[in-house]
Image (cartoon, rainbow, N blue to C red; front, side, top):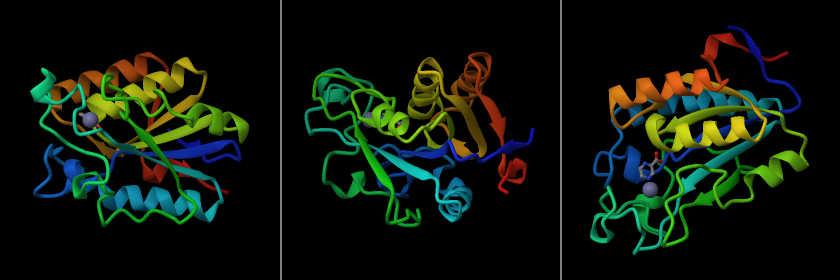
Length: 194
Ligand code: VGL
Ligand code: ZN
């Protein structure tokens, strides 16, 4: 499907951080490093056109509820101000990037970049109606971000050649769920920029 980057479009890059992407990351997402090249290409497209680029980051306090010591499913990861929480160095973020930190409440899991953040406020203030989503993990934060965006009334384009998930099966299910809920899939060669 061909889809246009319009004046009311924004790019959302989800959680390309060391703990998910680096070889020695605390919670490696398979395939994360292999999507970074395409993510950078999308960033270039939006930057050249002057469209808003958002980078979300998982930004947990050291005692976050999602960590195993507190009965959660995950090893400690993306702890605020740690090396693991930094953006993966090969990700080429523009200097005007809008950084959205999420998962900052010690007692609440927040997979979605809209959950407890100013993202919806900022995007609506700029008249954004269509968002293009890439990053990790397809089956967690990408999925939650896309589902929230659809509920909030955005048109959502999932950038299929620039997402990676924790597990194949749950990622495939997540993609189907996003499509059923109204998201469309596109890849780099289908993006129209006038
Ligand atoms: C994520 C697991 C735990 C993600 C964040 O960014 O998808 N996954 N925290
Ligand atoms: Zn997390």
